[in-house]
Each structure stands twice: as C-alpha cells, then as structure tokens.
Length: 386
Ligand code: PMP
Image 1 (cartoon, rainbow, N blue to C red):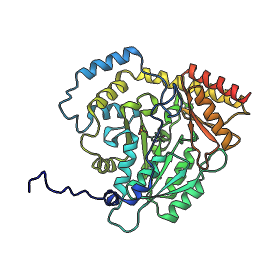
Image 2: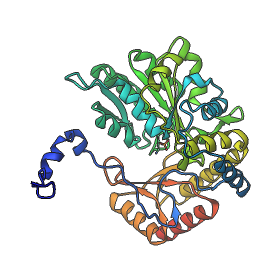
Image 3: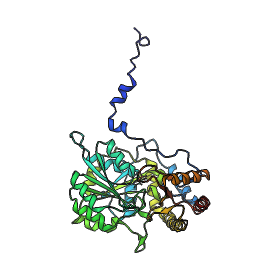
Image 4: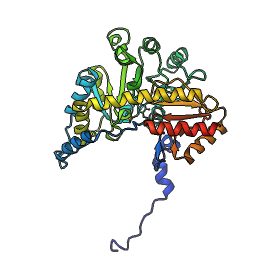
C-alpha cells in the first residue's frame, strides 16, 4: 500500500481536547476589543506617542540590529538601563516580556507539579485578572480576598488570615491596583509581609509612575519598603513594567528580588525571550530619551486630576473612586445605567472598559487620554447626564 492510499487516522477531536488540562479548558481567554473605537480609553496605555525626533533616533537604532542573530542572552544593556532607572543593581532584576511574563515566572517557580495538592496564592479581588488566570494555568490555586467597601480598600486582617489559613506561597498586591486605581498604605503592605514571613509578598507597581509626588518624585512602595527587606520583611518582591508609561508595544517588565532569588527565577525564563528590538529600543528610551517619557507622565497626571475633578462635579452620572493611577474607576447608580453609559460613549466613538461581573457590574474604568480626548469624554458624559 502506498503512502497515499494509507487510511488517514483521524483522532476524534474530543480525544485531543481531553489531553489538555481541565483547568486550562475551564478558563476564558484574555480578550480585549481588537478594533477599538477612535478614542481609546480602555486599556490603561499612555495616549501619547513618542516625539518625532525620538522616533527618528529609534528608527536609526533599529537599522543596526542584526536580525539574523539571537539577541543578547543576558539582556545586559536593557537590564543596566532599567537598573539605572530604578536605582538598583542589574543582579537584582529578572526581565520579562511584559510583567505578564514576570507573573508567570514567579508562579512557575512556586508551582509543585508532582504534589497532590496545588499551592495556594492569595489575590485581593478585584485586581489584575492575570494573577489568578496564570496561577490556574500553572496548576496553582488562586484564593481571593474581597477588597473592602465602596472604595475597595485593602482588608489587611482578612488578607493575613487567608494567607495563614491556606498556607499561601504568594500574595499579589497591586498598588495602585487595577482596576480600582487605589494605592495602599506602605504600613499595610509591610504589616502583611511581616505577619507572613513564609509567603512571597509581591508588590506590583505597574502604575507607580502616576502616584502623587513625594519629595519631588512619585511616591513609591519600593523606595519606602526596600530598607525593611534587610530585617523585617525579606519576603518582599517587586514587579514593574514600562507598559503604562508609553512603551506597551515593546513588552518590558521585571521582577526585583534579592540577588539569590533573582538567580533562581532567571532560570525559569525561556532563553532569548526578550526580542532584540525590545532590548535596543528599551535601553535607548530609558537612557537618552527619558525626559520625553517623564514629560508625558507629568501630562497624564495633570490630566488625570482634571478628569477626576470634572467627573466629581458631574456627580449624577458617575462617581469617581479616588485614584493614583492613569485611569479612574467610576461607579454608576446601577448595572443598567453603567451599560447605558458604556453604549452611549461607544456611539460617540469613545471606548471605555466595562466589567459586567460582580462586584464591578456598576463600574466603568476610564483610562486618562490626551487633553482633546478627555474633553470629548467629559462633553459626552455631560450630554448623557443631561
Ligand atoms: N500588573 C498590573 C497591575 C497590570 O494592570 C498589568 C496590565 N494590565 C500588568 C501587570 C501587565 O502589564 P505588562 O505585561 O504590559 O507589563
């Protein structure tokens, strides 16, 4: 029988699917609108492109990248630029293709595939969905602790109690949190770390650049808490990203951890995960074009404060929850009102984020845009409320 005549053994499709782990089949894929509306205020990105002169310089640098070669395995130039940016040593950094990858690196390192019961991680809810999602994919069990009250405060006692009760290996604390915009107190984060010495306490400062300034720079949990990692809280680990301050397309994130832990975590990254163009462009922007980023961050913070003030005066339509991020979570009076406002904004070409599931069915998350976009948003909301 020739090869052509051989019967094709077609595996029943169901049998193939059954090979896929049930916890993966149970989750829903991460989705955002693929063709967003013209005024895109739904994804916590920076609304500003880099200035033309900066883009021209970056284009020149791209011309020099040997695309036929693998990129620098150790990501040296980018790591050193990040270390300068943070005021730390490269040996304490583990880079990620976005902090999404960094979340996966941390969880992969803590997963225990050969053990009967899955390690537990704790996540205050609502928070960034990829913490729980990635945990499930990697065979860990996410356990949530509700945030407290209408303004979504951190419930320190409940967080500590849940970590103890479930023997959690890790807790993710995003501050400012997504999607609430709320920043927690340094003392509360430290209290959790001190009370749970056997747990990795991960402070995710994805939105840290937008916090109100303290001593001329944005308040930073990292700066406040690092001195305590020598004695009271050696279990603190920090996450960061350049995605929110204008470089989302490059996909640059990192974990900052004690050197010995960073060495272990670095083994989890896939070789050559960080593309050459990302390494070159990221290092250049952080190195020679940092002022352009800083100016844009300042503009976003100014616009955020203006939008929040205006929203507060439009109180009938949406209640803004106090935010320290580049977005503001707003509460409508009912789920149906939130859906109406979402649709009415969409009909005017404005994309904001709706959630539709508890406890956020009445909420919309609005990313701060350019001044003209924010004006269009505020005009539309005034018209809707009228
Ligand atoms: N952490 C938080 C709190 C986030 O909101 C996000 C993005 N939505 C991330 C991490 C991941 O960002 P990136 O992978 O772009 O670094």
